[in-house]
Every structure is written in C-alpha cells, then in structure tokens.
Length: 250
Image (cartoon, rainbow, N blue to C red; front, side, top):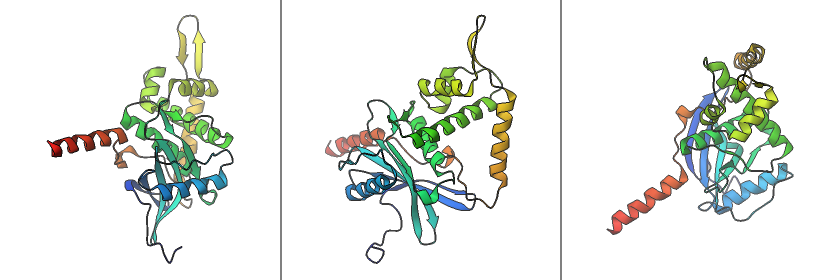
C-alpha cells in the first residue's frame, strides 16, 4: 500500500492545526459523498474497535473529521468523528473513535470539544447521537463535567442553565444531568433551583489541570482552541454554491 499510495494527508480540507505538548495535530474535513471509498474504509477501521458500531455503506450523508498527528512523513490518523450534514435531532456527532495506540493522550476530549465548537459556529446546541456506548458515555461525562466546572470557575456572577447552554453549546438535558451528577444543582423554597458550586470542586479541577500542564514529558492534546479553527457550516457552503450558480446562469 505504501508503495502505491502517495497521499500524505486525508483527502479533505484542513480546518485546524495546533502545536501541543510534544506533538503537532491537524484536523481534516472529508465529505463522505466526494470520498466514498476513503470514508467507508475509515468506518471499517472503527468497526475493529467499536463493538456497537453498525456499518453503513452509504457515507454520503456524513462529514468525517479526521484528527492526525503531523510527522515528517505526513499526517498520520489518530482518531476521527463523523456527523450528519443535516441532522433532524441536532446531533453534532454520529460516531467517534480514537485508535487504541493513541489513547490517554487527550485525543478523545479534543474530538468531543471540536464537535461542540462546530455547533457554536452553527449557532445551535448539540449532543452525540444516541444510543451511545459505555466508553463513549464515560468520555462525554468527563468532558461535560470539566466544561461546566471550567465555565463556573471563570464566572463571578450567578449563571443560569440557559446561559450555560449558550456558552457550551450543550443541550439543556445534558447540562441539567451534569449539574445533578456534580451535585451542584440546589433547591430551596425561597430561591427555587439555583447553581451552587463548592470551592473544593473548583480547586480539584484547577490542580488537575495544572498537573497536566506541568508534565512536559507527556504527549497531551488540549481541547480544541476556537481561535485556530477555520470552518464554515456545510449548509452555508451549499447555499453559497447555489447562489454562485444562479449568478453564473443569470
């Protein structure tokens, strides 16, 4: 395969690149309709590691986001997620997979954070497609908790659930479930429901974050930085294409 294939990166548009702790990563968007064979092969690879995954030969309705490690020989895939081009239920992720040899490096949380940054650009809340695997649920629970604590630790004034949804692009259901899991959604007869986060939770979050940043020998990728993301929603691109065609015909 290496003798016949001259590709050094996935066959799509590069939408993100970042130098992280001991590693450089890049993200590529691949259209399942334009690159049918490539995206079908990606699904086959994911099936090797995801027991619950159902194979579909029709990749046309999906966009694939391929996360790669940048090496001197090219961009090497470490994981990916896919999402529907048009989701009836506002799902922002259909399938996610980090290759086993690249786990415990932050790639999974990076992929999840990327899916939410895309939702922010689209101007809507999103959630992963259900049902979700046990491992997937654990990864999302960890991401949701960290994200909620991060937002609350940076806010001096009280914040509402709707504001949390807007800031994080998480659905109201996921926000409420996470607040309950953290045991910080309180209720009293005078104020009703309100969010009250103990300093101990914020302290543990900051200490863990500091430990990760202090370990310079570990390969670790931080969540997606929106300042480095270059992406436009698929439906907006399709509208622009139709408008250009009308202009050319007119």
